[in-house]
Image (cartoon, rainbow, N blue to C red):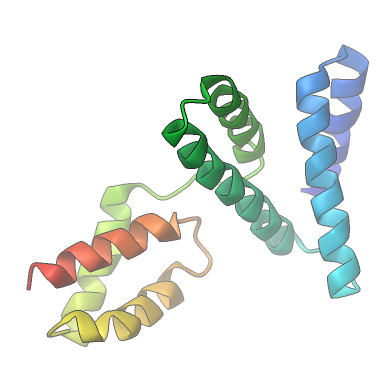
Length: 148
């Protein structure tokens, strides 16, 4: 994954695509910071984790900018998200996530909102190696528990 990012960085330089270049440089910087913190070469899983964090930060920022009507910033952030998501494996659909949640509910048999932690723990174990939007997972689990 690191090689692909480096290749895309070079091609963005050659094409003089300044926007993509700046996004990839920010990503490269975040990857280097993580590598320094971990004190070893990052695996593809760790690289994906860093990219997910970067996407999450931008999605949170989009929500904030929408509140204050900063449409230019929202547009730029959405473009950045699109560029970063190219490096992530395809995200699970809501239907796939709901199927996992339903199987956990059948196993755990939660009775109230107090069981949220137990449900989320089991869901996390099943989704550990998959690319799922965990904020969506949490929202769906809360909805299902509140309807009990």
